[in-house]
Length: 339
Image 1 (tube, rainbow, N blue to C red):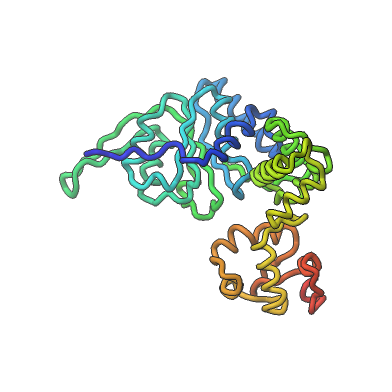
Image 2 (spheres, rainbow, N blue to C red):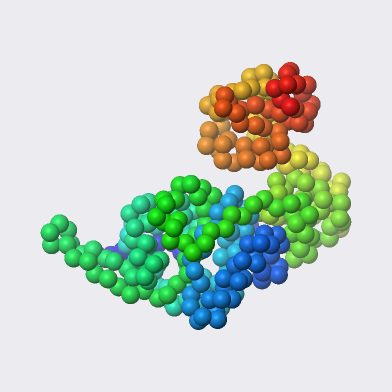
């Protein structure tokens, strides 16, 4: 039986490849932020090296763009082993998992992104691989079925997810430890932008770094993406360096305001404030009002709007806060409700 080998490295746009290859931290010292997590991972890896054993399996969770994939790269580099990358969507069948696991070398790191998208049948194949480094293969069907057990190299699984609640309890329990990556503070984001600008050869002043950091949604991936767009704008305008004015103009062309709100963010807030008198209003109604998918609003836009205090979820629905109204230049209709 021919088994299709799953894709180990996701196909990337050239833009993403530049971001990965040029801006990705080369060591834990280059990795800005998440200090407690870095410290704990270093202890785990150091102890594993002393015991001459593979490191325990690690589960990384939290919003996208915070550096989960980068941590997987650094873990493999720290251990001095190879890293193989795949995603939950690529592992559709048990045979896909078997192909990857049997291709690993002793001590290798396997990184599975979007691990919450694994189906239960695939999860069950991974259980014995994680616990005993064994792969159980069922040959035949019904009464004639036989189980063949294959020894696997002693590997380390690093899994990443933005939705840890979708992982089954038995699967979560097989990880030695899990770490939640949180949003960065503005000071750390500024450090990341300054480092990235240096690597990209972009001359940028401190105020411009602050402008980009304020619009980065506390997320390194967004910060780097905005820096590159600001760089493009400055180059087209034949400007030798990026100033705060240039950064604001570039972000303005992208319809990103000083708080990092995009056009869709403002549409959500305006719909609640104007169409529904500030709320409370259900998600379906908001989605219908701005012609956007419910899942996109709930997973992509709402977390940031709630983090900065412009939106709140209540038992009756979504409401816009006083701060959200004032950001839009709209006077709250009910000070008590929106405060």
